[in-house]
Length: 268
Image (tube, rainbow, N blue to C red; front, side, top):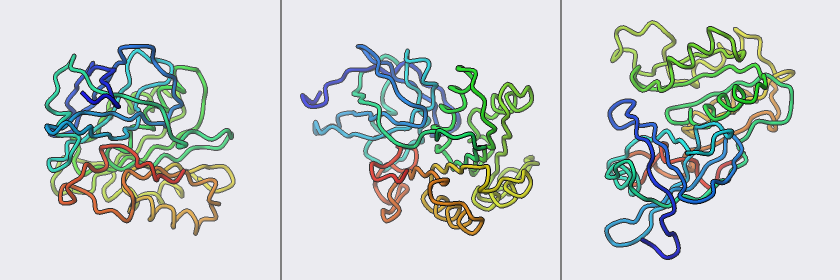
């Protein structure tokens, strides 16, 4: 355990979504710290050489419950952090620091278009669950893009919220590999490819909507450019990149990628 980053928390929950994809939670040993939905904590684990590997992770749990902090994480085989995390058992210690980030709901009355790729859904879950817990209401349009149907975390819960309208939520998942999901009858294509249709179908414009983007930087660039052509000013396009655009990503890069949370260089 590093003197600079002493272990101060414990893995409290580990729920497998699909192969290599989990929703896990960490509880602090001491006094919990507050956060704003959309922010991230930094988790740390020591590697075999005693070096502490730190990664920022978007919080997916509501800010009204500080008993534990929940995260949505994908295992990256050649990464530095997630292989260490996958070795833990519930109850094992780790380091956690928080909370930081400017990717939060804006203080406006606009409708919200949330666009997430993969584990970029995490901060939006925190926002949605907090709105429900506090009784606040915002019209939300949530687009979530994944490769396979089994990667659609929280799908059943989000579908229920949309159906009972406890919150005015429109949930639209999309699969980028429909050939691998023959029983899927929903939207298909990468999430950035379905944004224009969502804007048109629901009449979302710069006059009444703020766009929030989280995940793959290529997705963020594509939607950012589309939104600009629709007249959205920069302040109505909020962005959280899950790795710097100039950096290679994925297992081949030898670093933990989108699942490992927002980069400190995030534009927000």
